[in-house]
Image (cartoon, rainbow, N blue to C red; front, side, top):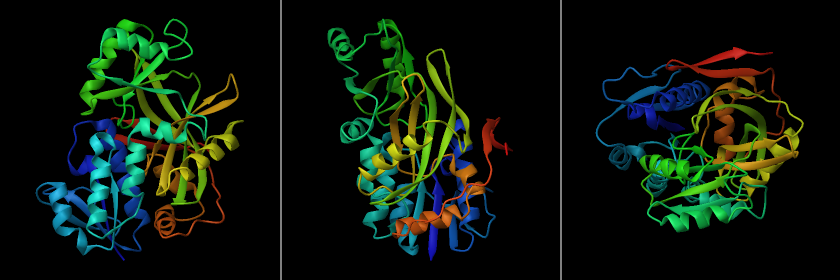
Length: 347
């Protein structure tokens, strides 16, 4: 089986080191896991980027979409690692599907439903606990902005709000506000992170930021681990620094079952899926934040702890076979340092 793997941030030499650090680490992990296959790694022309782990480096010439249109049929399957922002992951997935090549991941329809956080909210709001979400247009009136905020049970005087791009990736463009003046400033900041004419407004839930890693065959889903997210809030901006895999908590079982229900509620989510959540210790509740229909950063730690090869399990899941026994051996902390993702074994 000939498999093409590419990671969008490193392939396009994005300047945002916080994204390329994570993308590069996921790419390395996947290539190592897939060394028993005929694996090909798409790299920028003239780059030395990852050519180890028995993968063959293929220099990309020209535009990525054009390259895929001309070359993807040479492969049996493709694993795209790309951001949801500006429909990048959707467009790539859709193009690969149209060329008749197996996407080793979620279908384009499922990618679209999880890329748009408002669509995700509307699909899940009556099925799992999910943070209340409102759609807000950039060019609306001051009066309408205030009406939007007043739709929530609590105003800015009693509860902070979160503003974010509807198609954002990681913590890019996410703002926490406590006043209407901060709302106006944050709105202008978000506009730099999306091409859409609107963004979303949510209640700020104080708690522990976590994610659940799952494998799905498009119908059934199996949680692999609950992961701690090291998220910091500074001057209203949220930053993701790393995490701990696995993470033990009194709400672990509830969180993983909730994530499983959420993934099963969106047909076509396949392979590795990550669900971001908040654990509200005060009220013993869990809330879905968003679903990532692609490999996420905890992959790099999880692959070192599982009793099976995670990359091979992703392929098996896409072809309808999920693991029956899941064991995690140890605990790993991963964190960003300069332009590298570091690891420390906790136990």
